[in-house]
Amino acid sequence: MNAVIILINSIIDIYIFSLLAYVIASWLVSFKIINPWQPFVRVILQSLSRLHEPLLSRIRSVLPELGGIDLSPIIVFLAVQFLRNLMLEYTQ
Image (cartoon, rainbow, N blue to C red; front, top):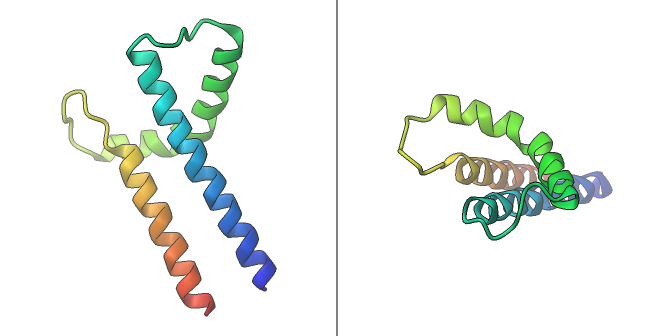
C-alpha cells in the first residue's frame, strides 16, 4: 500500500510542476518572450494545454470575471495540495 501512495504522490508532483510550467509558458507567450509559432514551442504548449485546460476551464466557468487575472491555476494548485495532504493524513 505504501508503494501506491508514493506513486500517487509522485504523479501529483509531476502534475504540479507541469502546471507551473504551463503558467510560466503562458506568461512568456503573453509578454512576447517566446514565439508560440515555433514548432517545438507549439508542441510543448499544446501538450501542456491538453493536460491542464480541461480542469482549468471548468474552474474558470465558476469563478467571477476579474479582468486579466486568472486565478484558476492557483485554485487547482491549492486543491491538489489539499487532496495530497488528505491522502497522506489518512494513510498514516
